[in-house]
Every structure is written in C-alpha cells, then in structure tokens.
Length: 266
Length: 67
View (cartoon, one colour):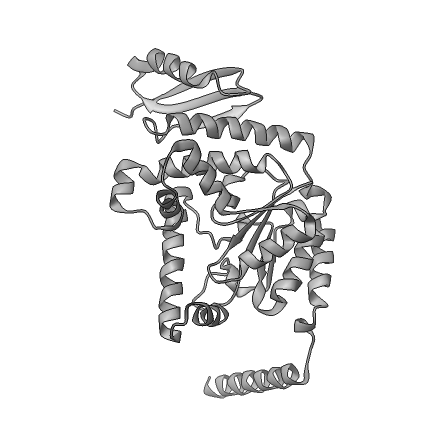
C-alpha cells in the first residue's frame, strides 16, 4: 500500500516510467484524472485548469489570484484521489500537494538537455534549435509557476526522496529501481499517515470553499479541528469567526472551526 | 568555479534524500544503480579518463611554470 508522486521534467520520459511502474505495482496511474475531477466538482473548463497548472502566472494572476483559486480546486481533487491509496501520480505539483506526508514516495525524473532535445526532435518533428527553444520556454514557465505558488524551483532536490537521471539508466532501469524503493517500510501507508492525509484533505476542502473571498487565508487541520488564519481588521473578527464556522462546519470530518485574525499592519 | 548551482539536480545521475530512506537504504540503492551496465567502466571510458588526466596534468604543469 502506498502513494507515489512523479514529477517529470518535460520530455524526460516520466510518463512512460509512471505508467510502467504503476503496472508493475498494480497501482492506479493518475494524471489528467485529477484535473477532470476538479473540472467536474467546480464546473470549470478543463482547459482553464490545465492552463493554471502549466503556464507561468500572468500579471492578472497576481492581482486576481485566479491561478491560486484553480490550484486550490486541483489540490482538493488530488488529495481526494490519493486517499484511495495505491496510486502513482505523474504530473505537476504532486510533490507540493503532499508536502508533510513523509510516507508519500516523491520522485523526480529528469534528463540532460541534449537527451531531451533529441526526444523533442523525434516527437514533434522539429529542428534542434526549435527543440532547444521549446524546452527552454517550458522550463522557464514551470520555474515561474512554482516560484509564484510555492516560492521553490521544482528543480530543487530537497523536494524529492529521489531524483533520477533517465539518460543512462533508461526507462526500464528506472522502473525497476523505483519499484524496489517503493517497497521500503517508510513509504508504506500507515494508520498515522492516513490520519494526516485526512486532516490535509479537510484543510484543502475548507480552503477551496473560502479561496474566492480569502485567497491569502492559511487553513490547517489537526484531528478534525480546522484553523483558519486570515489577515483582517480586528473589528470584524467575530463576523469572520461566525462566517467561517457556518461555511466549514459541514465538511465531512470537521469537529470544530477556529479563526485566527492577524490584524492588518497600520 | 563552474557557473552552476550544486543544488541543480541535472548535475547528477541520482539524488537521494536520506531522511526517510536512511543511510542503509541509500547504500543499497547506490549499489544497485552502480551495477547497471551504463555505469560499468568500458575501454572508451578508460581512454576518455586518460585524456582528461593528461589535460589536467598539462594544465597544472603550465600553471606551475607560469607562477
């Protein structure tokens, strides 16, 4: 029993590895399904969610928090999905969405630029220069995306349990290695990890409800007790407390809703 | 020295976070990977290493004579 997230550099054959690994483990392989679920749950076109996950933030995103809202919806759908367990997820943000869940095996697949250029040239039928430009643009867009949302470059090794360079090891070698590591005790689902994931899901559901009006709110949950921290005037503390309680108390598993108002700096 | 951040994962074949895997697990993984055919020493690799060594020797000798 376990959950594996695979972050893949574009054109690094990460999808192939995820599919083969899930087959070998007998786990469900998930990627686009998360977006489809979020699209259905929140009635938002899949294309808008895809753009939120792929494109660098625009000037409007900084002002309107549109990307933040969509990511909150996707995160909720993602956590609901992985709660089923025995999942290999490949795509963006899995490692961010599972930060704090140490039993989730977080993998990054990468390859050197020349290797990726060759893959692009074959797949997209473009010249070497076009392939190089395409990869540079994609990498920069992803870097900006993760910096904007999480303040960390996705290439930072601290985000993952293992980073594999596929050039030399090849797809089958990587699959075999990841299969062996996924059997380690530390990557098995336990009652404690399930409890932690449940709290994380409650917090994600709560944030998805309030993100539209309170994009900068910080929502946490421990043992079913939800804590919403929000920057506001102390004069409206009571009103906010009642509002959050009313909005969030019916989420499955919520025992109590607490509100912490951080006074505006004057 | 090299114009690159050592934290950039593209520099390595394998990067391991030992928090969860632990030292023994890391040893096991590295041994497993090291046995893969692509990491075996070949005549071509030996020749390349020899060339690198020669270049390094020449560079250090020229640096020593210049100073």
